[in-house]
Image (cartoon, rainbow, N blue to C red; front, side, top):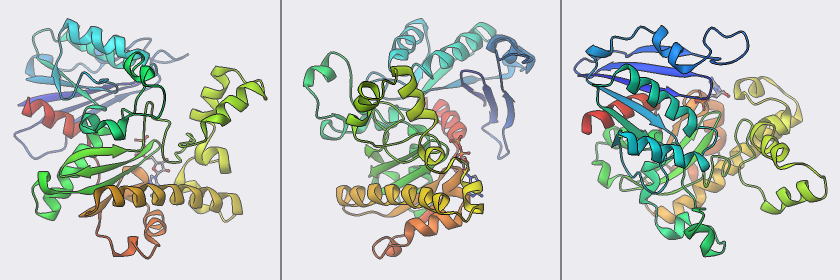
Length: 341
Ligand code: ADP
């Protein structure tokens, strides 16, 4: 069984081909800067064609789709209606879903006879209950405008909880973990008996942890103040919170490797703030979950930085917890979802 996993971003295209019968690394392709000035490819279609993939040899294609809204609770066979629905959901994920749709359209045109599956970043979190996913806003904003917590990185958290269960020698339905996906984007997930019951990203990936360039949780009144008193436009504030805040905003650097090399106070402060926010989330999820089998570290920072892991665990209560460091593999999880399908 040969499965191609496609992850189409606004200016990038990542493709991995898995041979599911063999224990071997997938064949990987990455095209960046699509459509940018001076780039080799002006669109995703040309970029995909340039990879000269043998579509006839593929049994399935799995697509990463960021937002599945409330509708898509699991991997879904793509047809015209599904594509239209993913397009409609672009209202909730303007930075991601349109690019995902382009990837799907191009792959469908090039491989019309290969079944294609959409795997949604939000799907794993659709097991959250109302008390977890609703915001304390007037109910009609949820009912009419779909404003609620959706959560992201779901494919990663799902993979991590299964890997944790395997490493612990337990069934995933009986495994309760707190998973930390700490990359450029970062989120925490409370996973009870294999199901997401709460997560730190919300209506968008901006909420929760202090990330490379995203603020994570802030008082929403700050946004109003920036707009009203400091006369910042909506676009400016959006850019400020997503691309100029987080670690970058605090110490002018978003790469944790570089921050760890520095010895100045602001670099230390940025790390301390990031770690403290992570600890706050772990603490609150420990209360919600009651019995936690393990805390999982993953993502570029979680997988590679001993120092950050130690800082997070430098706490009387957390010291006694079992921890696992697991390399996440969203593409493999998408391929496995295709197999299950
Ligand atoms: P993305 O969210 O883009 O997939 P990754 O999961 O690859 O990102 O994580 C990227 C981040 O991981 C980098 O910004 C860097 O700060 C951090 N990182 C990678 N390797 C190390 C390391 N050895 N020590 C500390 N941080 C690291």
